[in-house]
Length: 352
Length: 135
Image 1: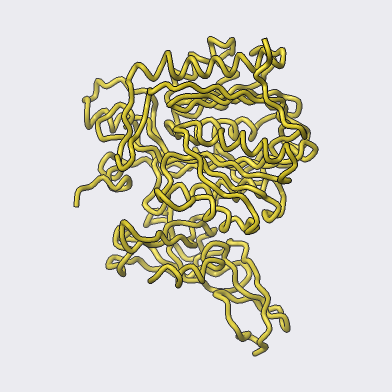
Image 2 (image 1 turned 180 degrees about the vertical axis):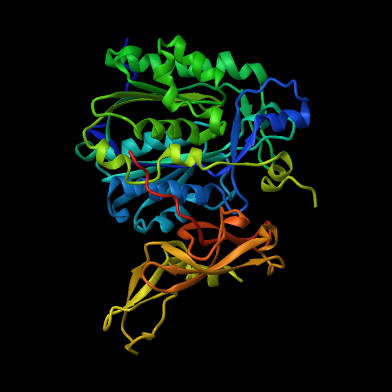
């Protein structure tokens, strides 16, 4: 059987990365108290909530600035600013141009927004790999960022969080982590969607599990294993898309990973599901403490449905860059708990 | 405030871009055409690093149009590390933590929107500085 692994012509890697998580936290017990009483089974401990003056643009700018700091490059060398999200502030007008200008990127750059539910960020990352790997650009910035929407009282309200990460792809010789290869696997699976002009998404409840999340994550990850001749034992850390604690823990175990390989990149208990930001944010938490030579597997999942899987090898340069910007853990620990009433105000859910 | 007006100020709003006098190196924000120190009229752009401290502050309970949803909110005069005083909102800070001398850093946030179908104006605010990470 032919390999499904993708590799660019020119070897590339992660030149810089940056995270952002807003400071507010809504405990899942608050959502339970409101809709199900104190007996509610909670899928996570708490989720991150954006402040009133934050949106995908402002959050992308902060993560982007952190990525530029870690890359140590002049932002005018960036040839693409791509933002994957399902909560862009405008229906028409790119987030990418605002972020590019705020980062001081040259006017001669690609800039656009990507849409693929929770996979939008890693889809942008695949494109950034292609753009730098072909030599069309020296550096390309891919961002996955979301302020996830959930109808009040829906199961999603426990977990729909806010945050994400920015990754600058560049030449392998300047990289923190070199890309060994990637796989993209998609099917038409209607597990979760939001129609135009609708405020909140719909989902297929349990249908989001087996035929959607588990199938795509497992397929993309196993294809990477097969093509590279690796197995779970070859990776120091793995990060999977994390809509809750249960799904990534089970999928990782089925792929042969032990809990200690999963722990560092599994953030959903602390910040919920950051949608397009989730896999990339987990990856930044891993890179913040990674050691040279370690291998890292990252597998996203987006409803609708598909997965991108990436195999990275960490280089000697990681140590000098890890602390060049605020770490993911610092953002997570900068927490201010809020109650359900404050949450409805911050999410602009109060009636006029 | 209309879209072209805010568009013309984007460099200062997004990048904290002011000017530096080519004669005496004095740095100014917002940008000026004539040096407030030596009177020379030759400037080059200068991006401020974004770090500073609260020089003075107040709280806004009756906000101007476009800012209603943020009230009450703190405003401050921030002494930038390079010298100039900048008037700006503080964000991500509890009322009790606002104090003269508080270390702050520039962030880009939503500053105002005139209507639900209008342009969103982004610009600088300041928040308590997150200290550098330690190993």
